Image (cartoon, rainbow, N blue to C red; front, side):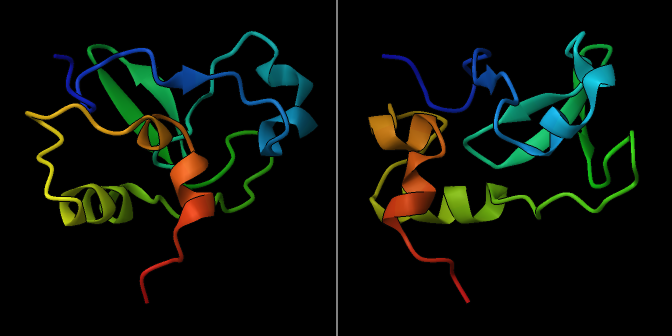
Amino acid sequence: MSDGINQTNFSVPVEGSHMDLHPQNAWGSVQYDARFDEYWVDAGEARQNLFYCPWCGEKLPPTQRDRWFDEVEALGLDPHHNEVPERFRSGAWRKATRPVA
């Protein structure tokens, strides 16, 4: 059984996003994790989350990482040990739930 956290292929092309405005990202230096609505760059063996666009300085959307964990754990799942439902493997879960206030 695969877990929903440690899979490495959650990066998606950043089409239809802020990065489309910047042709200098054509080589894919900025990545996007749809699960958490996070932009990031490789930093050796780690990811460096971006809070501002490296090309224009615009503030990027706030991460939804904590909310993702809250939603998955509310289902009684431990994302480190249980397979997460399909909708939590993309940004689809954000459309199905309301933001936590």
